[in-house]
Image 1 (cartoon, rainbow, N blue to C red):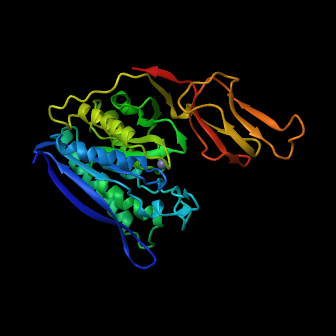
Image 2 (cartoon, helix red, strand yellow):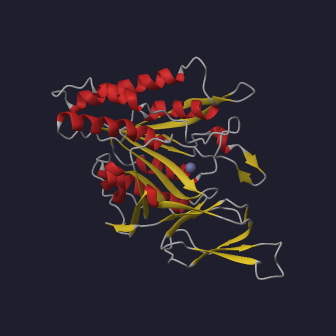
Image 3 (spheres, protein in one colour):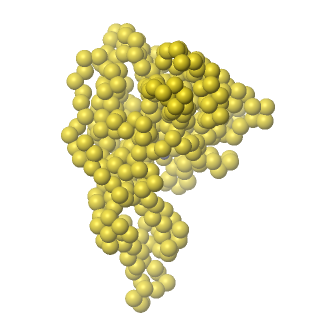
Length: 373
Ligand SMILES: [Zn+2]
């Protein structure tokens, strides 16, 4: 066998009948030492394309020798996937507490800074990394054994994080509502962005808002910054995490999924996970912006909407983004209102429904963007 292969199950929740809800955990272990990679999909239950991507990755990894280990957890939120209302999956929020399923991961900045004080000038990267990982895992265990218990989403997140915290590379596969492919990249790992085959890149700072990518990179980034300041040299721990948005929710496309899997392999190859593989990034235009310039456009009015701007296609200031029909004004000139672009932008995603209330997030857009090579 090219790689060692294991399949286990992880219990992530219990339903009201007391039954365990479990997810499969697929592991490929290479014969050579290397990074540990963790990839999960569908923490938001309607965002299903990542499962197809993981399927393709598993097919490809059967004949691709690797270094280190790759852990794949598809459909990691069996609660979210099964919450349907009519034709739709309501997979974004824990229905019990209303929490976003991707905001309950754990990060304790003060604990990182406290740990940084235990590192001496002579300690090797390898040793710091080993001690810090044990420290992170202990913190997670303590959080999970909280006497007062934890909410449903929080429990699920921490069970997954306990697996992900062992990894050097974490990829969380998502989808937007109606969306182009885009990638969240921590600013310190900017160079990694062009190794994926993803045309739109958002650089994010070292701030924690509860998501898995942030919970993974914030501790290592903070530790690295703190130690660099103290010891006046660089500390590179090689830990990177990304949220990868693979098109639109409620949509599955097998052939695009195979391309998505190739893009992930291209990045993993840049990190030396693959042995003698000739997987390189596609030549394609890539556009990037900072998180602060990734803007949400809300509707002022409610009504029936035609989305005129296509996700991924640049729009000039003043061009029409959407037409809103107001059924209360059909006989007069206020029947149709145009929503135009406030500046030059690239629409990345839009609301999935053609009927909206006032204050709906209609589009999310790149502004102040630039091409990257
Ligand atoms: Zn998502």
